[in-house]
Image (cartoon, rainbow, N blue to C red):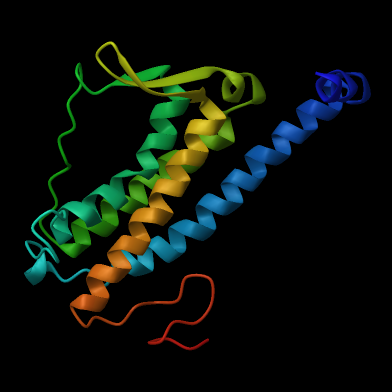
Length: 184
């Protein structure tokens, strides 16, 4: 508790507001950077292999790629809602029939997420957000925390997609540096 009281005494509301605005700017920068890498990875997804799975328990290549393209929409959803109830709104993947459709879905969701972040403020980011399945709470966080989790999910599933593509012998673009297929 001493740390919190010291923090509260030494950190004015104005500084806190500036800190949160910096967080919004950092989130925008991260989203745009990660979106470029994700787009390059999605662009490699071969339409003729959409049904392929590396294992019977794995998602198909199409389902994984579609999920990745949809995930930036979670940022917009989080900013505009207070919860998601899987029981009340079961997940139905967006229909994509080509790699072009996949890229367009990703790009639109990123554009919407950027617009949402640019329009938000610290009061919205501080509000609680809940993920549930009926009465069972799966996750409870602030909207800021949920947006960060969404970004982590994009990166996590993009890495999973990289393994799928590697197993299909498709060259992998670099993410944070060169890859074995693309030196910088």
